[in-house]
Image 1 (spheres, rainbow, N blue to C red):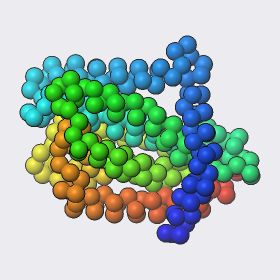
Image 2: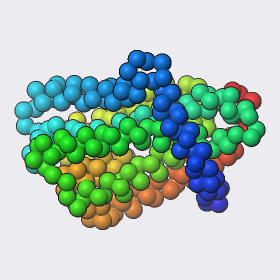
Image 3: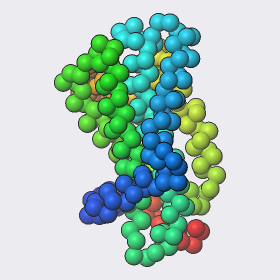
Length: 264
């Protein structure tokens, strides 16, 4: 299993130029038929952020965390969540979306899930800049801890890679998985420290979700919170979970890949 996983990563790296070109073309093609083009990639999340901010700031005049305003707490949690949810949904359906490429023997289909992650990364990097702008306007300026975003972004991409290998390879055989993911995403969002701050035993249970580690890590990076090594025990749990997920995802992917063209 380990050898299979490493071989996929090696294959993706060897085709990095094709991967980057394909991901950028995919990013542009999403909004090719609209008047505003790729502007829509930024408008939709911004409207969502403003809506959540208005509603929940009215419900709670005091922020979810007294250390900083609610808008800071909200945005620093939504930024990684948007990237995760958009990447998962688009990558899960990637083989059906590009079925004409999957049926070509010469095309390397292994890069397709990763191309969707990179396609959403362009928007994500823009919102990271917006996040620093919002925190700075709130009096919270970038610090050395801000460099941790590189680490937590890497964590998120690797975690997404394992998840999307699993979901994208099963989607051609189980089309209903998209509906399941859509429903699950609505529930998962409320189990993360995005719109509220869990505490007590509930927090301990919810931390079993590896995304909790990433969301909290992004917030620490934006607000100058704890260094990632201060949560080394939780970090070990995250990487243990992620490595197992990668091994399972790569095994399922390699075993189902020869049959993609038969069902698409």
